[in-house]
Image (cartoon, rainbow, N blue to C red; front, top):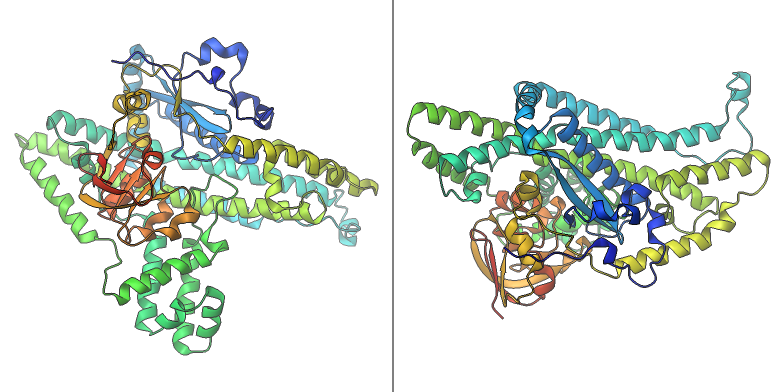
Length: 602
């Protein structure tokens, strides 16, 4: 075992031009000198899987809410035996995480409590999930109802007659606070079932490892694949629209025009109107889908950028006309699932063992869809509405001269927005100018310079001493942080043209690499290439029909990249650590998704 360690965050300096960056984030999210001894005793890894970019101050709220809510369910509600929450920090603009273990002596005491608490959810899963959907939809509806209007010249006479006794600034500030409250609330709902989904899978995973010595991780994953999940619905809606376009003989209109003109042309025919009606029906809710991951104010959503889904439809129509199959190979995936399940089940020694296997597999299959489904309802749909409403508020500030651009608001922390609102309301109330339009431009420029400087440097993969052995199950399954991968990051030896990662989805292919650094670059992908990236997003699914395989820097067996690639029967190697920097676009590479290896051929 190597005795090497990663650099301490206290020795890792910010890039030039980023001086003063810590004041952009809450005090509890940065490293402090008086806590150095304690913080250096923990192992932190960069979570570029969920937060690959530098945070603007407002956007940092997403990691605050998400990881805090994750922790409360592990630690305080479910009492998951081996895992508490996850400590998290922002360092030089990036997110770092440190899983919090449970004292080994206390694990046994937590088991019966976990069984009782989680057992109630497992036994009532369907009714509780049905209620969850209602709760989340209620939050979405509440957010949709919030509006931000400029303050009027005078208060409405009806308010006077009715003795309201308030002014519009009260409701404006209240509406902002309500949006932050609803965002926090929906992130609590996000984790209500998620950790249980992982726990049920991990229980089945552990059972298989014991019952079938030497079983590959991938074989366990295959036994729960092929389950229909809502996360694939947006892509399926595009496929249906593409099929309908060809059926109605509208392929030329769609392929030869941008969306606005195509819709105008189609509005002149019965066939076109039929297609437009299907397009409109698909938009809600399925176009509340981001090409990012929902954690950043800059993430683009289909519903606000209709050229994105329309572009995917154009690509699908082209493939249909070539005679290609564009749908996921669901029958093939299901057949493989049943084949491998039957083989392992038949190898068990007796009926009792088979019953135990059936019970654990049955639970894993019941709860597993939530592991992906929650993503659509929270990161995509809920956050789509949240970010849209925040942009509406920022547009109000732009209209009042506070900012030049809508994106400027996100350079302020969430609690600072309350000060800006009060400044606006204060000036309105007194009949004088607000201070913001004169004060803020210089401050925004300063903060932009800091954020740009932070973004100029790649994050360190980890800090401090790595654990001798990585055992925390969520860290392994979700992020692909294993003993082997951590040691690989530390190794100064050049591994030549060979990279090792997680065997995430089976298959062997060779092809040209296309290194993608952001979702905006997906249009560069050429059919038959191999996608190489730091991390994929679920909404990249429409391009999976074009590519031969996927390789990512971070991600474990239960990462979105791994799950989606298995459902699309696409070879994948995740958690390589540095594939996106070591491999160059145009390189010929060989991917073995079953072995978790990538070789640069030329």
